[in-house]
Length: 48
Image 1: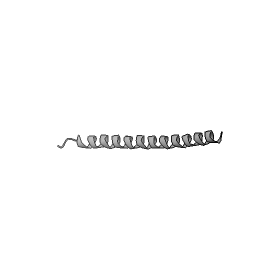
Image 2 (image 1 turned 90 degrees about the vertical axis):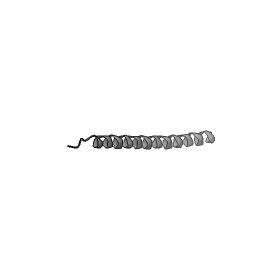
Image 3 (image 1 turned 90 degrees about the horizontal axis):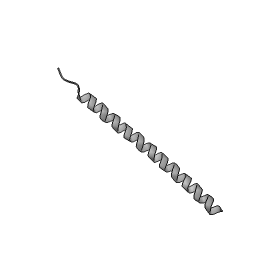
Image 4 (image 1 turned 30 degrees about the vertical axis):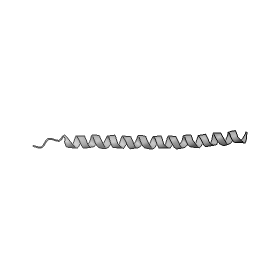
């Protein structure tokens, strides 16, 4: 039984790490998209 508990704990820690990594990637992607949108808006200003 002890092996099964260790296995469950290890998989829980692994899942937690994967969730954190996924959140970090999502935030990074959103930041990149926001930066690209901002850059494209700044470029579109017509000079008069």
